[in-house]
Image (cartoon, helix red, strand yellow):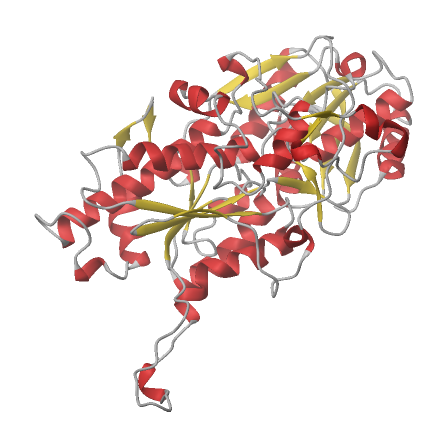
Amino acid sequence: MAGHVVFPHQITLYLSVMFHLAYDVRANSFFRPLPDAANSNASSPSLAAMVDGDIIIGGLFPVHQKGEKSCGPINLDRGVERLESMLFTIDEINNRSDILRGIKLGASIFDTCGRAPYALEQSLEFIRASITSLDPTEFVCMDGSKAIARHSPTAVAGVVGGSYSTVSMQVANLLRLFKIPQISYASTSASLSDKTRYDYFVRTVPPDTLQAKALADIVQEFNWTYVSVVHSEGEYGESGIEFFSREAKAKNICIAADIEISLSATNATYDDVIKGLLDKPEAKVVIVFLRHEDATGLLNAATRQNLTGKFVWVASDAWGSALAPVKNNALVAQGAITLELRSTPIKNFEKYYLNLNPRSNRRNPWFVEYWEEEHKCAWNGVVPTSIETATRSSVKPCRGNEKVNRKITSQESKVQFIYDAVYAFAYALDKMHKDICPGVAGLCPLMAKIDGEKLLREYLLNVSFNGE
């Protein structure tokens, strides 16, 4: 499959249809309190996964889920695995001799917690070098020596991320001011196709216009003519369901109820949504254009009300093949049809990821937290404080050699799109380096400061390469 970066209207959408059947589910999980940085404001130091390099690529990933006020629990489905796929790709590129000769790629990766305001705070780190200007001639030391800044912010050549469309929009508005290119691996809102507003934003996934059409085609194929729709507040859900409604009207599909789930939804909110769906008993089919967390909350509510077999769920890619929405809701999710963007598992990443352990993985500051949650254990004998007192003594210690048993088809679906995004930057920078620093191994003075506009217009938008 060729890896490529394109404007959203140029891409072809490939969809896999996932039919969910009942299956055994994992035990209830526990959560460790977040590091202080995850609940801090922009003035506090932020945790980051860092790799030193001559050219730095920024990264934004939902390592933690969205909490009510700040960051929630670790995001097992789409957080750490996505982050590690970027680190893996950078390692792979740095081990090659055919691109970026003499240049080492580095990374500066932050957690977004799935919240646009928090992601914007983290993204300020990407533009610090652009707004920090220290002129040593303005400072005179008492002994007459030259003043030297203790810390010099490192500029990023571009940013991979974010995941949620609302996050990408906020970040795009900031990065465009400093001409920093951005490639998203998961933001599918059609609004991001507006190049008058998001002129430094591109993506390796297709927009929701095509996904909405696919949902309507599925409904028509099964001859369903009366459906309800549920969508999340924000760009992803609102734009997605808007395009679905247009397609539905053209196909003479009637919408019984259109219910929005707010960003601050609680269990009571999801219970009310279920009540709204039950008020339209003839509409057995429910079109779901929800964020991952909202899909989980909705199915949890259906399980609480014992609504097995009551609805047929037809859902967008945010539910897709994710485990979280269905792991405790196998019966109410049975028979659901969900869309997933077609992607190819990266075989070498699978070997890398399954061999990670908290002893050797020092560059990912969230990995121990992930390990504890994934294996239901306590690292270094420190039991997470969120565990109830009555059960704390039964929590086993982490050994560090626990294994995750899974098939390669279980690889997180956006890994390939992250892999392609990082490689797009690498190939664009390689071509730029060959043009600006011909015959030079390593950076030459002309590339000491990378022109983001030139990188985007002349190289990134013209990049083409063979992917995995």
